[in-house]
Length: 168
Image (tube, rainbow, N blue to C red; front, side, top):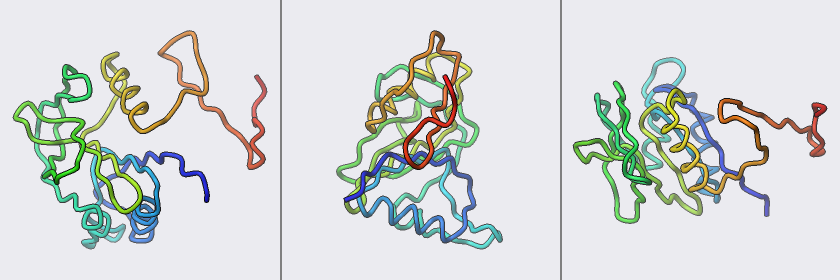
């Protein structure tokens, strides 16, 4: 069997149908998909296409909300366009609004899982960076580099053989 690494997708309200199907198949076959800040409901031609939303049973409403994370209980941010979801038994809630509406969750689908974060995550504030690190740990992503400053972002690039493509 092939190793399934977590896949993080930044999504908008539109996505072509073929990509939606590939993402659904990835999860159903054992993959871990993180998608944020919104789920697609239209294709690239502005026609309704809710394949991914329906396959993951994640219909949502968009509203202004103040967000509090439930992983550590104190991270708070505001989002003009937060997505709020209905939960199902077995869902792992990872973020709510101050009004206790769910805006982030992990749901099992087939052999895999989807983590939906229904609000933008930016790195302007240290507390949001800490939240991002917690989310990464929750899905099993591990740090492969260490920097002297949290303000540095490092990307390790490798070719198909696994060798680094840049010199240190």
